[in-house]
Amino acid sequence: MLQKERIVGVITKCDLARRPEEIVKVVQNKQGTSGKPLHHGWFVVRNRGDEESSSSFDRKEAEKSTFNKKPWLKIPERRRGTANLKHFLSELLCQRIREGFPGMLETMQTLLNDEVVRLNAMGDPRPNLESQRAYLVGITQRFQTLALQALKSPEDLPSDEMNLRGNAERAKSKFARDLRSQGHFYEFSDINPAIGKIQANSDGNSQQGRTLYDEIRTQVIAKQGEELQGMINPAVLKPLFKKQANKWPEIAQNHLEDLADKTEQAVLYILGHACKEECAEAYTWQELKKYVEGFARDAREKAIRELMKLWDQETTLHLQTDNPGFTQNVQEAQLLRFKAALNRYTEKHQPGSFLQILTNEPHRLEEVPVWKSWAIISPETIDDLFKHMHSHTQKNREDEIHDLLKAYYEVRATYECLL
Image (cartoon, rainbow, N blue to C red; front, side, top):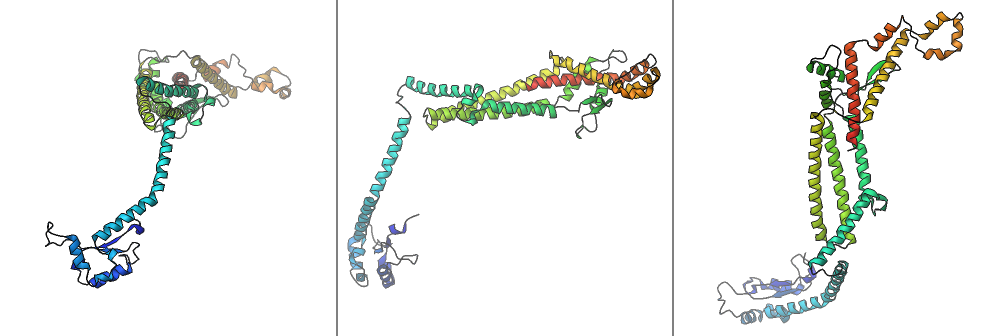
């Protein structure tokens, strides 16, 4: 916005004024158009009229003829005519220059000093390719040092924002939790030997009321082959595992995307710090940033492709694992089922009923309570124990499939978390 103290009022075409006295009054009072006094006052000039020829018009004579008579004579001569206006403006301009020159000189000196500091910070001149290459090598070497520290020794980093190892470990832990808590399609069942029953780990969000055992029965019927009654067809495990783990790709891709974002942020922060330490210019940082972002984009796309390839292998190739935890998990499930069956047997055939037959003082059994945790089997009850352990051929088969699937799922989920 134009400063008011810099405004000069100029009234033109004064020869056409119907009431020149009013113009003279405004000029004498220095009254501005806003109703406030005009700092530099007014000037009156005479312009060429529409009927006057530009070649024959003499401004000086025209203004002399107009302003050398009443009422214009009431205006000071220095305020009348174009020549006086030009002289005033040139004086005003010179005054402004004199007033502003020291400040302008100071500003220029400040800018010059800042530029000198900036140029000195850029180091020695790099007039040839060799020196330019050395300049970039210095940046990349510092970047490499910080990147290695971000992976191996984050305690040596100058900033926590560069701690890629810590961010990656936290993302990995979250992925492992999500895979274990949200990765299964159906809830697995737990065997509680204390009560002798199988409990389903339901979270209230079952798949339309179906359970894993419903899916097992469906697959047993669908994959029925030449196996004899009571035998397990191994073909049922593969589709069951694929169904049970079909949430993995989405969870894994979310994990990769999150890890890629954190990695890119840390790398760009490291690059920015390296550029700052080497006094690199903003355009250098921007160009290097483009390369890093390109590498990050390619790496992200490659990781997603590898993930899809791994999932395809997981669901199309034969089920396989050399993880000893698989056998251990199966054996633990078998042991729990055995204990559950034994507890059911013990509830029906309590050890006290056997011991009372063998003693003449049954009341003294309470003095030796250790027998209460026993399970006593006689030739007469062994058939009943067998029934508790193998109550139904179909049920045994479903339990075995469930335990094999759960054991394999757990070792594969652990393996995927370590990727």
